[in-house]
Length: 99
Length: 176
Image (tube, each protein chain N blue to C red):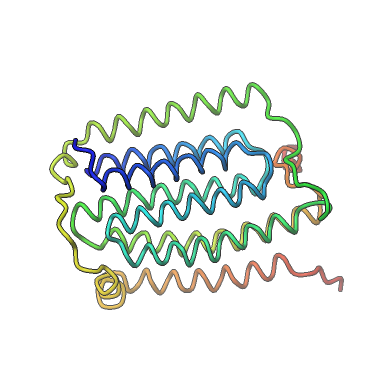
């Protein structure tokens, strides 16, 4: 299985995440799509790391996972907080900064 | 390309990952999307095993499936208006938004595929099927003994800050 297959798969996964962020309006679904994009990038990292025969790329994936965990903790706290104040997590209805 | 067991497993995992990712994007029920995301994450973990990244495959299952996904499900639970009602995504997707989003995503996909196809440095990096030694010890060496010690410490501080911040944001409001 050559590297290109993994990279194409990663590109497909990333694009799927982008589509989700662009067309969905539910904040939690947007969150899941961000996780999809992070996973796609991780997959590319691991694939390239494998074909180079080095573990440095995997260390990067480790860091990405850590930051993703932090991001989810903070992001969900914000979403729950927004829901408490606005009774909605539709990102189109949370528009106080629109002016 | 001969159709061996290896390619069969790869395509199986690839199909599982992309199909469930598409379900995450398209399905209307958030809980279904979350469980579909679980399938995607397991698929990526399987691909890590396939790429002989044993440590990351285990971490993927523990951190993503065991941690992040459970957190997302808690988020779904706490943001549904009534617990006994099916959680549906309110509001329809506007046609213009759908069109524009699709065009942008398609352009991005084309860009990525062009880059993948035209980068000459990747051509000689094809995986020759040799077995690598387990990566766990190597990653530990790189992090604790090598060039990634400082980032490791910074990330641990970041996690601590995120923990405190999440607790602070989501606690009950105290009127003083």
